[in-house]
Each structure stands twice: as C-alpha cells, then as structure tokens.
Image (cartoon, rainbow, N blue to C red; front, side):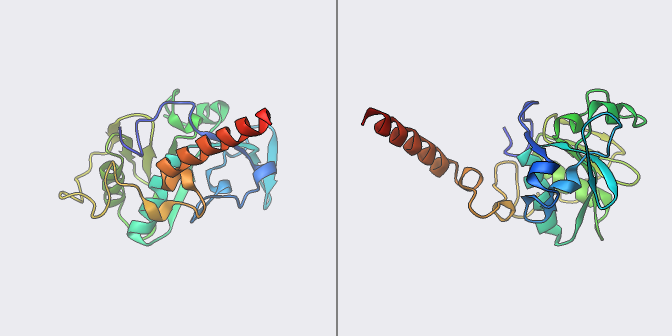
Length: 205
C-alpha cells in the first residue's frame, strides 16, 4: 500500500475550529482553515474574518503530506480551493459524487501558482501510486482513499518518476517537528509500548 493513498474511510482526524483554532498547522505550509467547509446552513458555525465555516473539519494526515510534498517540490504556494465538505454542502455542488471523499476529509481540490494542472496532477499520480487524481478546467482533485484517474486526460509530466518521491518514499520535509509517529513509526511504537509498560508498572506499585 502507498504511504499516501488507498486508505480506508473513517481514518481522518476530526478537528474543530473553535478548539484548535483556524491557524492550527496541518503541515508546515497549511492551516486548518484552508481545509474547512463553508457553512452549510445546518452544522455548528464558526466565523473567521467575516466568513462563515462549519466548525468541524475532517482532515486525513496523508492527504496533507501529499499536499505539502507538492508545495516543497514545486517551491510555490499550493492553494486549496475545496477541502472537507459536509454531506449537505457536497450535495449542493453540481456534479459532485454522492460518495465523495471530500466528505471524509480525504480529498482536496487545489492548484499551484506557476505550475500547470497537468504537471501538478502528474506529481500526485506518481507520489500517491494508488490514489485518485483528476484534472478539471480550474483545479486538480487529489484523494487518498480511492484509486483511479478521471476528469480530463493528462500526459505524465514525469515519465521517469518524480525525483526523490514515490509511493513508498516518506516526504520528510512535510513532517511537523516533534511528530515521531509520522517521521519514525518504529520510534513511535517504542514510545507507545514504553508508556504502556510504565503505566502498568506504576499501577502495580
């Protein structure tokens, strides 16, 4: 399985703007507010800079790794035009799939300043290895929960692969400082096991 794609639904992290704050960092160059859903008229509301959003935001960490990877590779701003969506919000978008992975926080529509949509899509297709990538007239859709390529057909801009990236190559620069789970899974497991053993030892005293 790719590190960045083909993950099951229900594995995204649940955030709230009121608790975590709109500037909470999902990755070094991405804030929580960028993945937030415009208010759907029903869900609890959060107002930021005069704009109404749904307070709850679902975001999958591997999606953010892929987005940050594109930001690092192209060395330019990656703009998220649509991130998490509530079911109600999704239903109001023309031609949106009823089972869209946006609902699970596992998809984003985006573009990158100064980078063609085809080149951006090619990056995601190569890095994800088994994810959903689509090119539309104004944006690229990328998801980490379903395999496939749809939308406008596009040629592979990296026929020899993206230098330094691949389905099983961790995007190290996308990791936040102090995140042992993402950077070093083995270390994270040792920390968890050590914590459990320590608590067990303390309970026996």
